Length: 450
Image 1 (cartoon, one colour):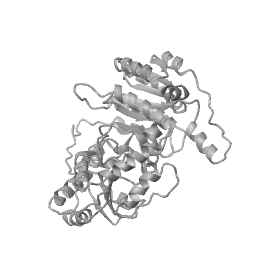
Image 2: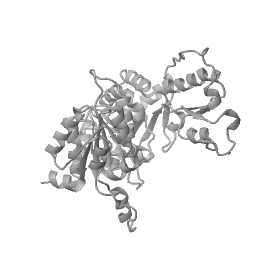
Image 3: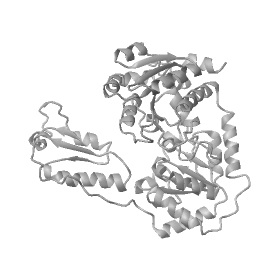
Image 4: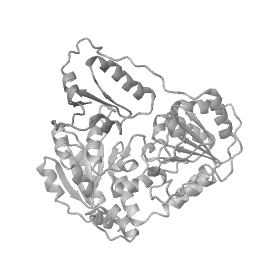
């Protein structure tokens, strides 16, 4: 919700304070819709529209702008609450029956689950076990299957070994996923192919045909669809599975991937696992930085909604710090307390939003900021070098982050090994405000590789 010029000044281009040519159009480009409130009486209807979308549609933000002259209108007669009670969409029985036949007849089924299916974690796990289907998760879906589940193949869809498994599947169920580049082709190499019959489930009709047109699709809430498929499959005789499929094939892939990780990948995975060991219920909010890229491939949290980062979409640098503050402030209470929130950010990304540390201090948010320092934009530099481009603008100046954090009122220290990190995390978890812990990439890699 934001203010805007008075109604008679909208679009005037007169250089008014905070004036934009079209604020609503700007915000509408990243929201489900943007509405300019032309009178106070419109507010109940606009809020009802917004919450109807939140309840029954694809969850997206909504923007409402209020002209300054509307902002001072009398609103005493407006409803204090907006009753909205809408069920999420469910697939038609006919469509469910058709999809059930395809899944029941599959000899090598595979499930690709995305963040849109995150509320169907229990149902998807049961469905995978019933079908003996390996499960690949998008980054936003991490935690839908427990990290040690025998059918889990992680979020490795961009890797050659995983793509070989996908190519072997005769039926692929993609549920709540865009099948987009940031999850399925992070190296921008192309080549993610689905030769088998693709079945898609999405609450948004447009998404069912984007990127990869399906053999058939259900327009439905993911949980409703999964429940319907489970019910229908329980009455079916499932096709005999190949002996080397399901758990066996997933285990072989995990072994192949584990043998392929290089030293930096293993060091960064050790870093993430150390944090998880000390803070097993932590919510990780990540920026575009090396441990996040690695974690997107190798890290599997135990629960859903524990791994967020900006590299899954627009890829904005600096996202993690303000997002982590918001994640803590808006987090649900579990067992009498909010789960700890960990911000994973690099030295380049932090400089985009460094003043937000002061906001965290002011709001007393106990966010733990793990600063991965490699003295530059290493990922961008790597792409330049790989393309025979002379690196430019990537070896940046980095300030004394410890001194800056302390100047803003934030506890801060540098660590270089596992035991130091564990101690720093324990101390940070006892504080009532934010903590910055700096990890030098070179020192950490050397320490854990001994």
